[in-house]
Image 1 (cartoon, helix red, strand yellow):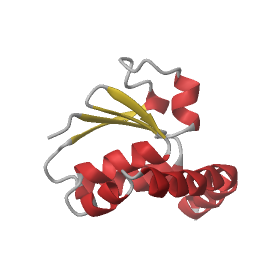
Image 2: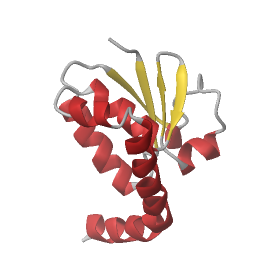
Image 3: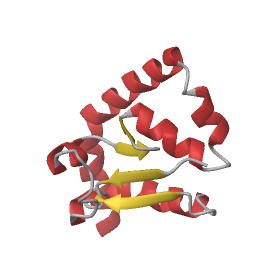
Length: 120
């Protein structure tokens, strides 16, 4: 089994919901979740601002970013493993990365909407 650490933005309402779901699905405790916004994960060799701007994971000592980090996280969760394996192929991962970059462009607006929804 792979050793996997995932860094997430705990100040982001979208990220909090997603990571809460991943924690529930990670019944084996295969993933170490680190909240980069709270200063966790000091052992990460990546700048904190970069950690907060883009999703990162470390799988077996290798740092992954964006779509590759999501695919690694999915591979560690039995229910999502087929999806994670699908995105191991370069063409599929390239498509997922394009979609992820598109999401990053609209993320600030989605965060504002999620915050409003949380407050109501």
